[in-house]
Each structure stands twice: as C-alpha cells, then as structure tokens.
Length: 65
Image (tube, rainbow, N blue to C red):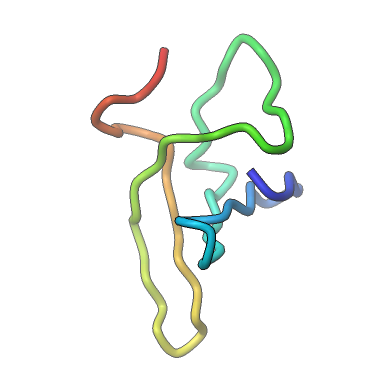
C-alpha cells in the first residue's frame, strides 16, 4: 500500500505501476491497514488513455482472512 485516501488505496503493482483500490472495493478487516502492507487485489478496470488501473479486494482467489 502506498497511500490511503478518502476515495481509496493507492498501491504499487510489481514495483512499477500504481493502481487504485476504490473505497467501495475495500474489504473490511479487524485490524487497520498499515502503509507498506502487502495486499491481495484483482484488476477490475483498465483505462489506457488515462493510464489508470482500478482494483478490488473483493472476491480474490487466495485472499487472506
């Protein structure tokens, strides 16, 4: 996780690309998220023109519980 904002979580993908996990796609957890924590997410949207990747923590294979 790079940065937590009001509209989502910016994350680094493979050390080269940034993506955004939208607030509506964040799975509620018992413990708060920590900067630098590794998250499991899936791609739900790619906008080539805007160079944006939308991610979701919901319904991810191998998700941590």
